[in-house]
Length: 350
Ligand code: ADP
Ligand code: MG
Image (tube, rainbow, N blue to C red; front, side, top):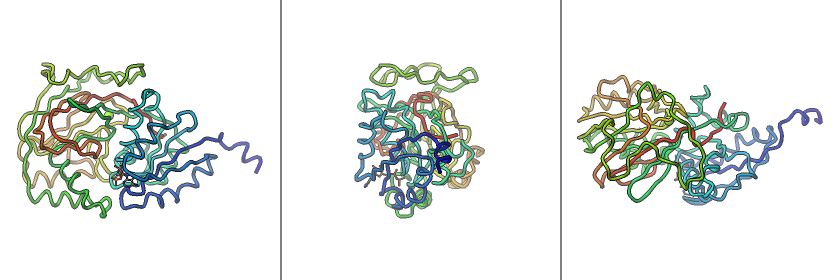
């Protein structure tokens, strides 16, 4: 045993955050099944089971960055979103947002865990995610500022509007279906196709911005915005604009929106871009069916009705009463701007 201990890795301390309300309520069971990975890797564990919404945000806001080596999040994308907002509230946000995160899929939307596993060449499962958290190293992940006139928050997954936003929001009531809630929500929505009026303006990425600058920590009170125009001013002339009725708007930071939704096949964890799936005009039921059937394998992007746009910064204007979902959190419509900070966060991967 002495020999084994000599070769075992140095002792580390991980804080594990578990959301018992995520997905169909199995997060604690999921974690218990893979806790032994931590023990075998000589990791000391402290565990917090979240007791309410915003609990994870509070934990991240006050996390001792020196005491722990990694924060393992056992939940869905909503719990990750809370942790990111908590880090960004801190005075030392630039250090906090670089804190290594391990992500275990235990919600109904596990898009980030799936995207990380896909990038690492692993199947998305609690076992492989725990393996990456224990054996891997921190790799950069893009984070984006999302702002309107009154609020700013930080996205790691997606911004949706119209069709998918309403499905995501309304399907909360189908939560007991677990991952299937999105499918059920889609079927309900497909019965009544409609369009959403708005204006989407974006800085189109070109070959010469293949090397987007990486995030640099600074003493500024918030990440610097170098591309967006001030709110309320016209967008720069070289930006492109799509205006009028749209049938789909799905802006992704990473490749997968959930385990079975490969929305942005070209997206990399730290490419510095958002990838936006847009359907202009009124889509037929056939168009929608083609898109929904193609999502799992990323084949929807081959549909003639679909555009896939790569951008570092964009603005979306919609009527106030429209539903937007920012990383799965509901927001009202209006004028919103997004700018990507390349590699600002770090997640455990290979
Ligand atoms: P899902 O993918 O199923 O939405 P998440 O882990 O993303 O699962 O969590 C959904 C929401 O659950 C989060 O927004 C979080 O605020 C909330 N939450 C966390 N802990 C609790 C709790 N103990 N009771 C109720 N809600 C909670
Ligand atoms: Mg990106």
